[in-house]
Image (spheres, rainbow, N blue to C red):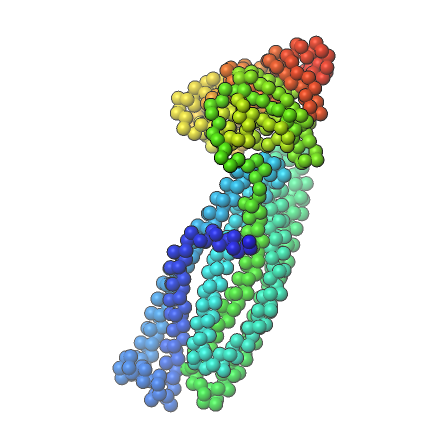
Length: 593
């Protein structure tokens, strides 16, 4: 299906206002075609003394009576103003309807695009830059408005104006009308010649602007790191280099546009000159009056302007099609973690988790996990440990179904996760991550993020249980204090306590902890682990950490090595065996010393 056919789906719900706009456009074209005639009657019926008994003078007498020429000229000027005013009002109403439909179509596309980005699995987002996705939502999506307003609306009105005007010109003087269209084949060939070039150059601009946005976003979000290493000048040079590449692409497109406009304008000028010459010959030969030639000259822009608009529209559509293709690329993206047909709501979980013969890889030829078999009882706490790159975080990501295993199954209480809805599954999982994600809103709204309907009392209770209430109340606005972008107004420990409060409030039967204390100092870590210990009570808990001392006496420990289970048991048991865990534990003790 073509880009334009895809785009039409976003206009289809608004056919009624579009129909109203079309009717108003027709009325506007009819009114606009009347504007040259008052001047024609002034020239032939008033200013030309030899024509005072002709058809133009007779029409003036029929409309206004036998009044002095100056009064007749005044009334014809008034008629011209009335026609122009009516045309302006009708054109305003039509443009309002078309602009409104274009903006509503833009809203639908942006919403669909953002919804797809929210629904697509992490594998998609891992392979893409977030700034590129943002650019598609914010900027590429505007192409739908261009396709509607400059594509459908402009093409429709231009074609109607062209046909209507040409029909009147044929009625007035068919040889002169055909002469005016002599340039049409040359204009068409020019449009075809430049269309492909415009689309390719527009695609390049979109890609380079996306790269520039990515560079800008990274440079600003990592400003502390930039300042710490004194890399401001380097970042500025990088920005200027990328901005220059974008400038070069935009310059090439503008040069193409300017040159193509020059060609089209020259073609139209040639057509105008030819019409003037033929028209002058007809006036001299007595086949056309001066007033009629004036009307013809006034109609000529109404004939050529739509032709020029169609050429510019063709090039604008090529640029819009390139941007729209980037949007539809996301919308058409296949979900690697699809909702199964007839997926059922997961019943309230008891907390039993089983990974059976699980293997996983981000690509089929490179597996990270190999034949993992783990059974976890309701309420049991299990820690997954191992060196960097052994697949711990990847394994944890399979539990909320951020990814599906390449082989094997993950089940809750005997339910294969592929057979239940993702929403019902994730509703029963609480998470505390190494870097607690906070949104640029208030503390209260961040705590309640996983449970939007929570009361103030429930939020306060969750904060107290996470030992966050005291520092929150010490802030100027208490629970209504803004946390800043990514929680920048809070310390690492405070952000972590907000994340724990969020998990307390959600009160899910399954808890996932991914390096919850690795960024904390020992004193804060000890305090946070006490809070987490309370959070774990009565919940099935899976925890990942490099700080083996914090989970040594926790419960069962599963040791991963090269994506497989090397050993498992309690901390003391594994330490006594002298295997992989013992090596990791002693190395950790040495580092702490």
